[in-house]
Image (tube, rainbow, N blue to C red; front, side):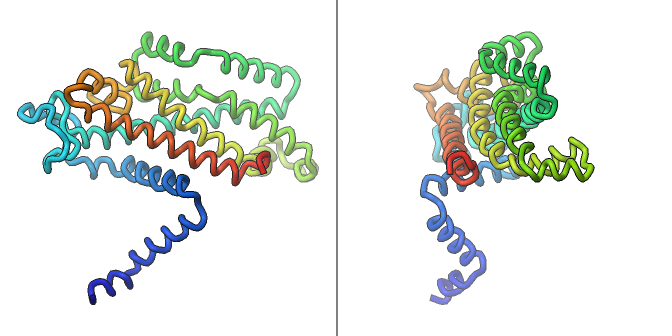
Amino acid sequence: MASVDLAERSPLAGWLRGSLSFLRRKLPLSVAFGFLWLAAMIVIALFAGYLRPYDITAMDLTSRLSAPGTLKHWLGTDELGRDVLSRLIQSIRVSLIIAFGATVLSAVFGTALGFAAARFRGLTEHLVLALADFQAALPFLIMSLAVLAFFGSSMVLLVCLMGFYGWERYARIARGLAISAGAQGYAAAVVQLGATPARVYLRHILPNVASTLIVSMTLTFPEIILMESGLSFLGLGVQPPETSLGNMVGFGREYLTRAPWIMLAPAAVIMLTTLSISLVGDWLRDKLDPTVR
């Protein structure tokens, strides 16, 4: 009884109970699950080097294709005796780094072009909109396959290539919102006070449109994860000895009948991560996007 009372009075237990109670009251169950799953993925990505029980290249040929559930290998081993859990943890880190970097790059590039179109109008606006239409009509996966096959695959190239995915959405959104915000009184007042155009857009217009852009980022993020996974599955994404979620699925498909855990573990992480981001993104859109209020 004393141990139970001590556990109930501990600050950590109280914080956990309060957090869970807050989530139940403030969030739908599906959205709460999405937040918890994404928090777990972020923690794994940040501390992957400490959480991996083995090095991702460490091989144990005597334990090839071991089934999950053993103390040595919780999720089993692959065809070379490498620990699936260790490779899964590293894959989560690599895939999230690529997706986050590409999403930020796409958002910055698209928003800058959208603001330029709203600022200069005329020929600049027509050129940006034409580029956006061209990008939207471009078969991005086919173009990515051609670029990676010609230049080879590297982490930097992959992030830059994925960063060009979806920028046209940010450009259109930023342009429309910037034109709308620029027509309001506060923007004109700041200009009359002597503020430069860069200051007006960065200090006054951007904060007012940031919520809509953040919602758009939550919609692009899972798409980039799936795109990177598809490229790695085809052998043109992340290259060995590094690993990613799509890379693991690609190598695991050859052993689907003999050792399904090699493929199913990363596939489940891809599915749950993209689902969680979509659930959280829809909830944020309902809360932050003024057009759906």
